[in-house]
Image 1: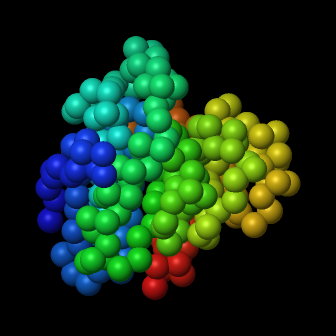
Image 2: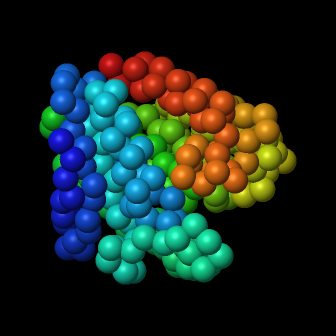
Image 3: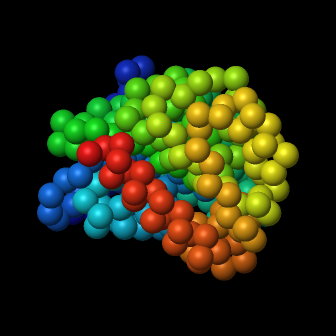
Length: 224
């Protein structure tokens, strides 16, 4: 069952979230951290697909703190606006929103992971270090390599393409050297955003399928 809900963070901020519950048995929960483009059709379908695998999935609208209901197009204008909002974003407040979403599903889900893409990948890494999640899965976290000196408190699996210019190979190597306990899966021929099937120029089906299989295996191990 899918629905749009409204949650309230500890500071009183109200924000929207997309929630999907599995039809059958629940294996755990996932907070799905959005790209900088918002809780759009792609992110909703990500939640739908993981719910089909048995995970309660919830996608908080992190940019509601700036503009409620914002979704941005995948073009130059949307990219500029997304980057502007990412730069002024307060990760402390974003993590408050992520934990609020986690708390909403935890009673029914049991263990809860956080998984995010692009901007949400950075959120997922910081949530692994500063938050209280049972697992973290950053997909090509745009700025996560700015935080290699923080240590994860939970198992963390990172996905990135070797052609990613936002998370380039030299930055990944630096991160790996500083944080050898974090698992990185690097996909040959894949760009930034390779999982997003709504963007044909970036989508890499083989990499996306393999990353999904690895993610499901990781979730089964960490949330069981």
